[in-house]
Length: 117
Image (cartoon, rainbow, N blue to C red; front, side, top):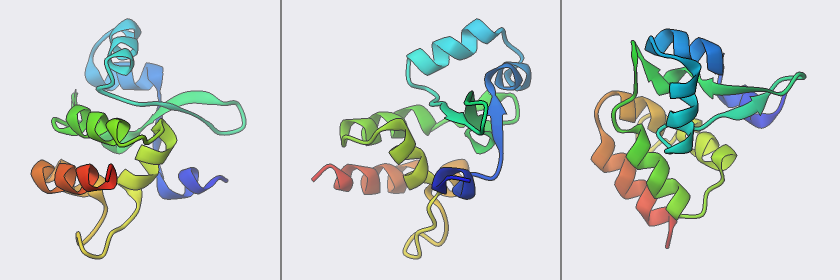
């Protein structure tokens, strides 16, 4: 397994993302196009998949889109931003993705903005 597959324990193929969100696959492709979500090719078969923690119930984690934008503006590739979101940070008391899911977007975006300098 790659480093990213070690960090992210659960991946959802795009059709499963559509099912969880209660929408058509074309809507998922739209979310990817507008950078509200990011997907990588995972596993031996290289299936485009999204980290399961990007989905909260039947919607995308609220603050994810803006955080993706900040990290992309800092020069992060999709793989690098997923690694950053899922890498534990002692000063944060956990992983950035968990903090986003807890509603701590300001703190996470501030940290992401610092990476651009």
